[in-house]
Image 1 (cartoon, rainbow, N blue to C red):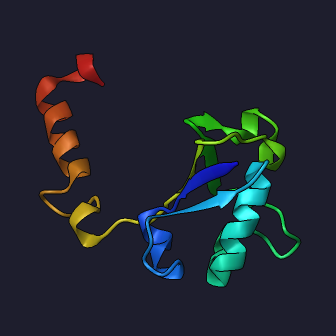
Image 2: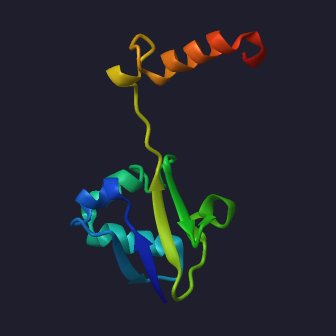
Length: 120
């Protein structure tokens, strides 16, 4: 069964700059296994040392979150699309800190101050 695995932009550097790959796989886990075999550098970004899918990596089959299905054992069928969506986190840059005059935080506080306590 050919399934298409979509590779997110932040991980494409580890997958030869490809945006997707197709594999014959009966389950999501099998498809991800093929993906990490073909692109070995992806393994450490998707899986832990003991082979479990990292908690910040979300995987979907045709827009269905596999965490609510059978996880990596979720069956696939011909034509399915598997999407990998890594959670992206980050800190604030100087442009978005609470001390910069144009930061969203400062602008929000100015709006709330003008609007009065009924909006707080």
